[in-house]
Image 1 (cartoon, helix red, strand yellow):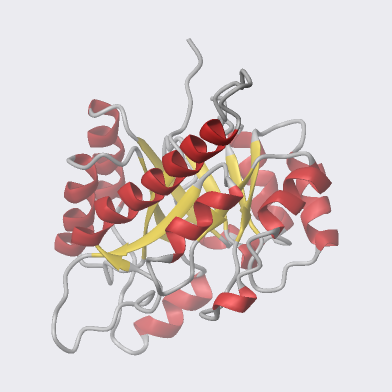
Image 2 (tube, rainbow, N blue to C red):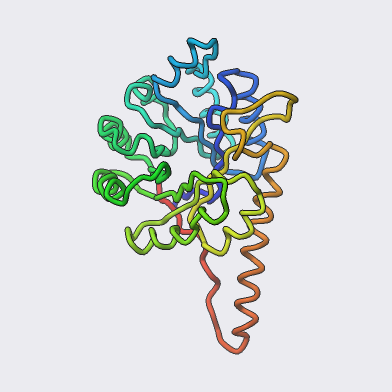
Length: 266
């Protein structure tokens, strides 16, 4: 039987502030939810050093990762790392994760790419921060024979007009690869609209709890844990309604069920 990834991915990012209780709160929610995949972000060493000087240590212990991977395997769920920097990844490369997300700021870190190639795990390549098509082509070429690849349309904007969701299908045709969507938009209504573009995956940042005065690193585009199931449901509902309307309009024709999501093989 082929092993596949479900199409929704939760992203903890660094919204745990390096605090074990917050990291476990996100993990605990995930393990008991309908979501099948989660990532935690490994930031650059430069980032960690910058904030440590300000008294903030965003790093989680290796014990957290070992335990998180173990618990995910028990529940038959997938645990991944979002990475951007060869130096910070070196300490985590021995973790037995299921997949990696290559952040757009690491797309030309060729030392990092070589380390990821050795792992031979599925790679999701983020295309945010004005990543050029030339860089996308080069990263695809580097990973092509070693890792299953999926691109992620990653618009870094809070303006609806600049989301350019058409790029999902443009990338599919141009690069002949499955293409997902990594959300950085601050309105959850976008997910009903998104279903029209049939992304192969949807990456969704989350944050633990609403607390007065607390601003999370991904605060503007992350959603609280108690909002996530409704977001997923609204997306799925919009997809089903669209399929139903298509079928009804062609009621005299035999049409096959629309396959919305391609699957990544392990």
